[in-house]
Image 1 (cartoon, rainbow, N blue to C red):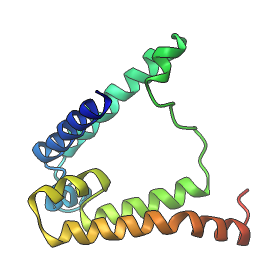
Image 2 (image 1 turned 90 degrees about the horizontal axis):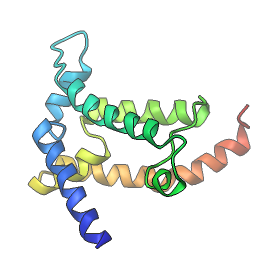
Image 3 (image 1 turned 135 degrees about the vertical axis):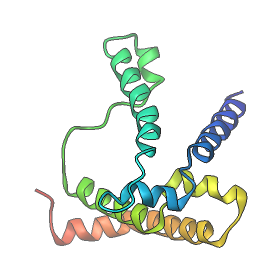
Length: 143
């Protein structure tokens, strides 16, 4: 049953990305082009994701462990080297390619080599990151 719910939820998520325009790289790059031809419509997409999750986190505080375990824990409010580097790389990739992980997977449904190239580069980066992080931490310890 869990696999069926996961499949349906993932399909709904992908459909939402498609309908909202998150798989259209020009729309995403228009959102990021603040000083040019700015397209603010993706703010509603982000709000549609952030607001329900913030409510869910607030709702689970002080609740029974069973209910709280159904939601992911809120992120740590610490700003460290990994967060800054990861956010910078994510933002640069998003701005250059116009895709992030979810829309990249959703874009595979309608073909195109751009999405495949992005997905391959993203997977390569995900596989290389743990080894690079260890080497980087050895070379320059985080403070």
